[in-house]
Image (cartoon, rainbow over all chains, first blue to last red; front, side):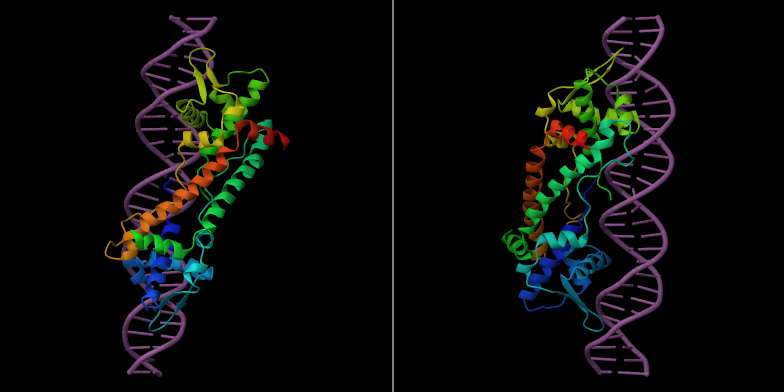
Length: 142
Length: 142
DNA sequence: ACCGGGTGTAACAGATCCTGTTGCACCAAG
DNA sequence: CTTGGTGCAACAGGATCTGTTACACCCGGT
């Protein structure tokens, strides 16, 4: 598959909001964020909407509308972003139910669910250790 | 949804081959494996073909043809299976190149690549700790 | 009270991927 | 040479993701 790029888009938007705030620009429109990501503003409104529902950004309507960080960038972890954009887990189980007459078919799904759960926990631990501030710092090095 | 189920199919096939071997049946046809997974034999031939190229199973042609484990199930880790079926990494970068005029657009991809690499390493460490024998044992418990 | 810039969302197109299926060439043991 | 099974190409159907257009709605400024 081509893995999806939602986490990338969301992290990009947050890092850009963090840098703009540091420069004194508290609010950015979806069009301004889209100009950095180089895509359509609607894509950004979808992602930023997810982040808003997760409480990571706030939005203003009316004249002078736009998006701001809801917290300091040090206090936003990539794990929260990952949960906000609801990326699907890396491994899927069988599409059709395996043969329940076969001992392997009967027990394989719970067995693999356990393994996959541990793998996802390892992923989450790693994502939790990186904040938007870290991403922005690494970004500005390049 | 939607992650693909290739690792699941491959692990299922290997666990079933391991159990059949223990029962004295060294060789299974793709149709016999497919009957347990409950799908089309061609799906299994594709997955088993990946596993053969990775050296995890062997195949016999002609009359009495079929598939066997190339090693003891204790010596096959899920990490090898994962690499054999070539699942794509969990996170994708931008589809279109970000705006290189923007400092965030310029540096975000290498920054996120670093993070994503660490996440994948954590995933791989976890997968390496489970063998097909472990999967089969867990499977037979249920 | 109106204006206007921006958000929220639905609807749709194109691309890509995955699963499942059919068909057929090829292989080797008996 | 027969025959059961593999190897592989081709295709259909479904799902998902990105990108785009369109339009209702919101609210600060005037």
